[in-house]
Image (cartoon, rainbow, N blue to C red; front, top):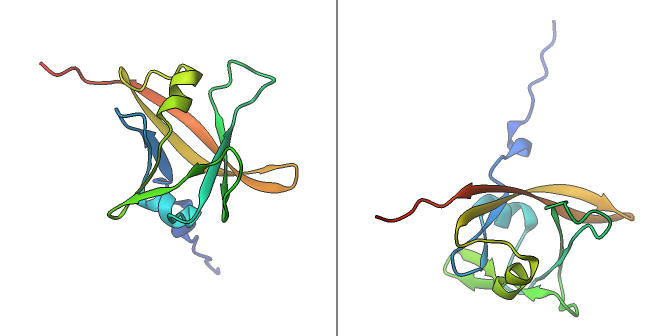
Length: 127
C-alpha cells in the first residue's frame, strides 16, 4: 500500500468577508492572504441579473483602478471596502442580521472571479 496525504492547507475554510454594522465589508485574514489584497487594489461586484432571488454576489479584484470599483482601504492589519451605500441599495439588512459571505473561486467567461455565498443570522439584541 502507498499512501498519498491530502494537503489540507488548500481547503482553508476561513476565506470569508462580513458586513459590519457600519456597512463596511471586512475581510478575514485568510481572505486577505488568499485574494492577495492590499490597499493598491480595487474590487468590483456583480449580481445575477437573470435571477433576482439569487443572493450570491460575484467579485473581481483588480490590480489597478477600474471605473465603478471600490478601492481597498487598510486600517492596521485589516482591509475593508466602503460598501454601505451599495448594501443599502441592494436592500441588505446588515443592522438586524449578521451577514457573512464565504468566498470561493469561480470562472466567468474565462475570467477568474470570486463567488460570495451569503449566510445570515439574526444579530443578538443588547439588553
